[in-house]
Length: 104
Image (tube, rainbow, N blue to C red; front, side, top):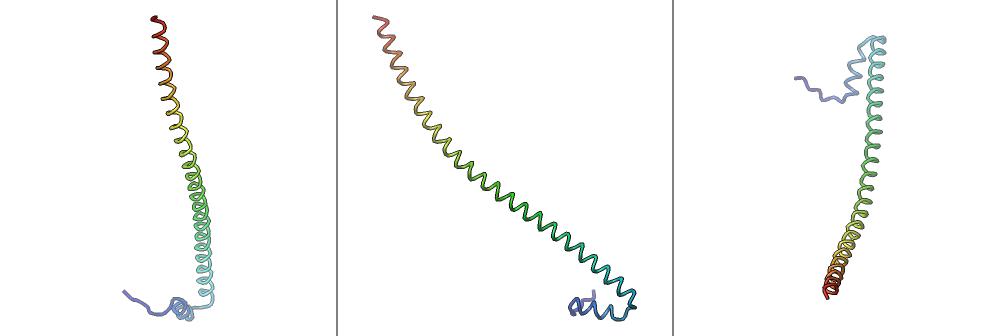
């Protein structure tokens, strides 16, 4: 396959220099339109990338907040469990004392 070592702009100038002006204008217009379409696509992709990055950052912040809430809930749950076990022991002792007194 033919591989050209000339830079793209120089190659384009050499190729287009031998063409009539009408053809040259049409080719330039087509190239300009293609360039504009590519730029529009790039800008749309950039905006989507920025929006996605912002969304990711927001979700990461929410996750960090949820981790803090989860830690607090775990501590509260452990405290509640301890309180329940202690209450259950007091109730069992009170029930035993009551049963003992009732039998007398």
